[in-house]
Length: 205
Image 1 (cartoon, rainbow, N blue to C red):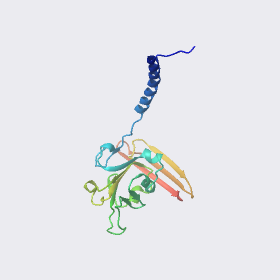
Image 2 (cartoon, rainbow, N blue to C red):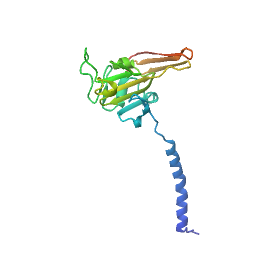
Image 3 (cartoon, helix red, strand yellow):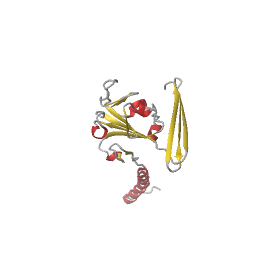
Image 4 (cartoon, rainbow, N blue to C red):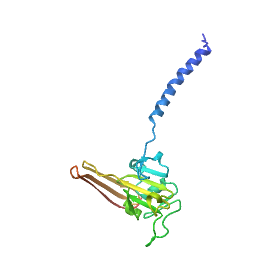
């Protein structure tokens, strides 16, 4: 015998079916959070969302997840930027020529220390890098005359209070073989800490 439901009953059944789905969606949305990235682009620590500069920031976790090993890999993730082994160009502004007096158009800083050469600052690897900040546009106010096109901040991991060691190996096409090693720990207990890294490799990926 067919059973007929009133309009109120049908509305109640629909509501009961929607509520669990809505609750699940809200719970999933509550679990999703944009990771807060702290940068020092303005010479002080601040959230990247509160920094009024066109900036791309990469944490060590991001570099590892996307396999960014060096500056050639990095340029694929930075808009309007071309990075060569020794120099970089942002928005078409870079070094006009590599010779005495040929200042770079994009300044490079390694833990707050200026480096005239990008390759020197990175040692051709991001193995022990904590964070990379690429600032696009003129940054002369905070970074000096060689920052007409922008600036690149490379912040390496700080030495640790406890002894730590890590090794990483990479095998790839065309005979690529790379081995990375890092050691960190106290040199003088509670007074002086130190860290050292090692990279060896051959071939090209």
